[in-house]
Image: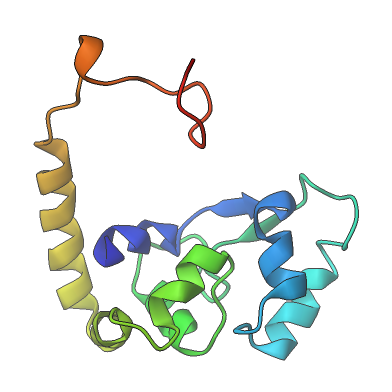
Length: 134
């Protein structure tokens, strides 16, 4: 999952998805937080965008992981990958070794692609990911 999170190396997120982390998080570097607050006010601006990877937002690379080590993760779930827990070591490896990240990402994508989804009465496609359908 850590390698797959590296997909956040490219793309954007809406303010409403990272506002709480930005204003209430305790593991975000202050200069970056201040810059992002200028584009994501505490109220309103829900659809304002910010890049997932501050350093190289349009390039698939390992800078996303380097930014996590500097407490610059945009989403709370991203920064939790490097926050004193069991995944810190993996983030450090990927931040220093792009090839290790690329290899693990490719292998994880293949593995995920080989999963068989649950269908029929064995599974469900949720209308809202946070709730079981009723």
